[in-house]
Length: 118
Length: 112
Image 1 (cartoon, each protein chain N blue to C red):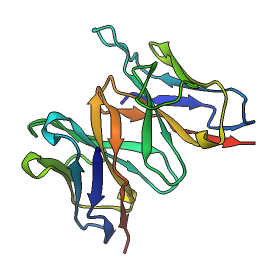
Image 2 (image 1 turned 180 degrees about the vertical axis):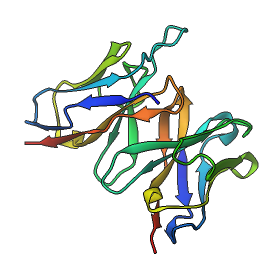
Image 3 (image 1 turned 60 degrees about the horizontal axis):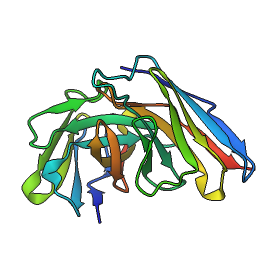
Image 4 (image 1 turned 90 degrees about the vertical axis):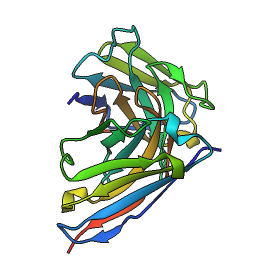
């Protein structure tokens, strides 16, 4: 069974940093593009970042470019999102998701909540 | 970025009745390979989103045949032939043709 489990969320002060992890199981992580998608409280879904199977190609939403870094460790079946210079606007549930093809995200984790507040 | 516009933003449906959600993109989602990359997701209350339809009209594994997708270019529709209680939630269209992928605002479906 395909499973994605996020961790690393929590309360952080404005300007702080957090590193999210997404543990993958039930499939070979190295075969798939992987994504982070976030959802602010009561709001819709927002595409955050993606990374290609070998980790050499990354893309970011303009709102996080230069502050967030996506990476992966295929040997450890784990996806990461390093988030720096956090602001209140980054408060959201962060989901990791697997790309079946052309951004059709066929498996999603349960999400991890990031709260940026003083 | 490609803007995705969904209508309506909320829908209240009697069980057994049909429902329809429209999605319009600000740019064509047709690729030179002939495929169109428009996908539909459902986020049930308290759950993560789940893929319903990919590439306009292909139902994802395990998705009921009550769900169907259609459209081309920039205009797309998700139809539920007979709404059931388990269909409640927020439906999102998402374009996968361009990077970054972009979602519609979501359409909340409730049961009357």
